Image (cartoon, rainbow, N blue to C red):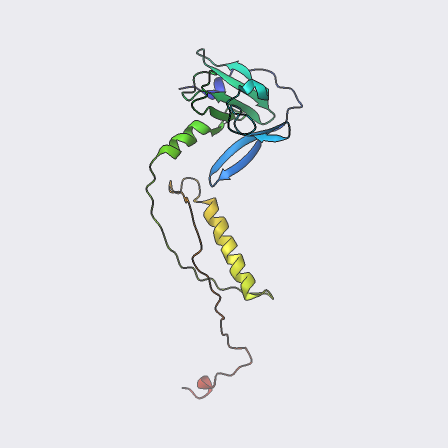
Length: 202
């Protein structure tokens, strides 16, 4: 197994741009860079995303690893992007299969590996649907009941997209929708109202 931190060391210029982190789906992050005003997330295809090209077209050069392994590499201020074949052994790519794209932080941490994401995508999912009824009471502070409903839906939506905390569960949400929502007024007795049942000891 290749240790991506064993990339042959080289000096980095001080004026390198950062690779940009983009979340393309819940829990899935890709690193991209700008080339001729176009964001690129796969340096093995052209700007249309349909045709195979050499990563050399995007400023990548062939880099060496210990053990004779090679990769296309391009340095950024926050790490190095690597492009290798599916097995992760060579810079020699095939137009018939997607390239494996990695982003390795300056400390050697692998922040992205499209090969791992591809293997996860190929797994047959074990799906179940959960229906949950949530009742939340708001102190409106001058807002409308409709605003309270909108706010609650946004809060639930954000929580679902964030997913479970690290280490909490391997389960992931693949889709969600709101089937219905309603606003119910809450009747509250004013402080000036008198409860005569207490006075009459009823």
